[in-house]
Figure 1 (cartoon, rainbow, N blue to C red):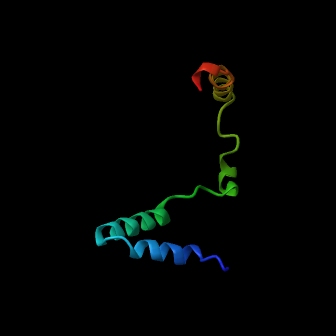
Figure 2: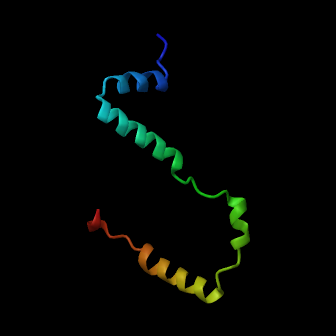
Figure 3: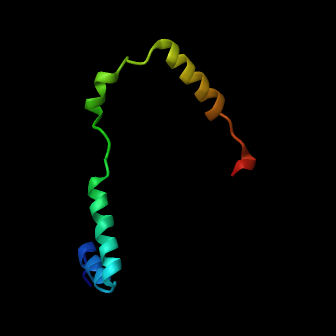
Length: 75
């Protein structure tokens, strides 16, 4: 048996919806295209070295203090 494509399954599911829900699906699909996907790494190279040494020391200390602890009761 040949698996139906995502497009075919999606089309069938949308066909079962009422007009208001179809409009909601359309709006959601359109919002996905507008969602930023991030920046390519190469475009961030210009930022390399832009954080001062003192700021980096502060960031590293905060990371070690707040992120390196395991709290078994928290999960």
